[in-house]
Image (cartoon, rainbow, N blue to C red; front, top):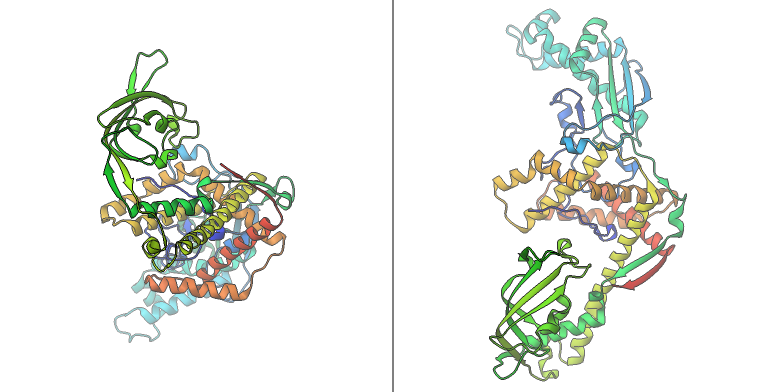
Length: 546
């Protein structure tokens, strides 16, 4: 089962049940962790924020929330900020991935907590133990002499709880200096918990270091080059509304007819043939003949009106073939063929005709209108309705192709050092969204789900999709940067409406959600849509058919 990253236009992205709710996926990214410990103290495990598919991430919206910083401290803590060398690589990824590390833009915060704060935290911890501990000989909630309480609870447990309390109260204050710059889910306490315990025990104060990834700088080449974009958008011939509506009418016309067996002539345009098809390819020295499995088909129903869907030259080569006849002919797969391994391959096709049919179709008039399209009373009404439908499809496809072309161009114009944490977060979110899509389309048993959710499966996705994930991040950051540079805005009414719609979707699917995160996601989507709208208006766009 393959998982791939698509480049669907962000302007068309909607917040719906495909967004990840906080408990819907067993793929999680810790918001805080110690460099050498697998688990956090209890209160940190409660700080995890729900993961969403963040399509438009801007530095301002990527800051971490580690808890309230309005808890007044009895004394000031000292925080020293230094730039970290670009050396850290995530050890959770396979070796082959780590051999090409992404750049880390990190800040180290060295935090010094004075004795006054430590003593206040110690008192709070002791008060909490007094309330909760059931010390023999003392009624619950009553004062217990400190020495007796320490003996009952255990001095080491009190020390651990005090260090946890100090971290819980001081970390938000320490992080306040990087608010708006720190990337969500990138905070790492670099000091060992055991070392903090030793410092507290010996000095009655605490020192610890925090390492955090910061939002990377977006460098435009050339500067402000996005203001003069020249975009060439390739449009598929298949999305031409007039042509598509005529083909749809033809298909509906066919459904009203019947198939008749041909016995007295060969294949003509408009007929349907049942074919057995095989193909081989030969090495240049003609010493090794190999079958081409992708070109083999038994009982292939070939509609000659769909000759453009097969390899060029195939239809012309079998015109005139009769039932029971076999034809062999050489063809070359074009360089634009979907299967890359067949591009440019010289093949020898063998086709056996098993059956031939022609269509006996009624002549269309108004009496068939309702059968062609329920609700219509005239043939003209059918044609107009189908055309309108495909005009909408064409417009949507054109807009999506335009957005994708713009985003691809932006990606080529920016230089960004992507932090490892941002790469992993975006990659896991894309993988999680793809997994939810699979779950929605097919029933997965527990074993299949566990296999797809395993660290190995996720890491393989990150490794295989590195280029695509990197492109998505660059596009997102470029879009967020343009939104700020151009002082773009969206209406409050749009924000409120989309938030309400998104929450309604979560409720409809009985999924948990965080309203603040939903609002944040809606803002990011609206920002992206506004930027793409602005770029379409300020770019020179040329459309060509392919």
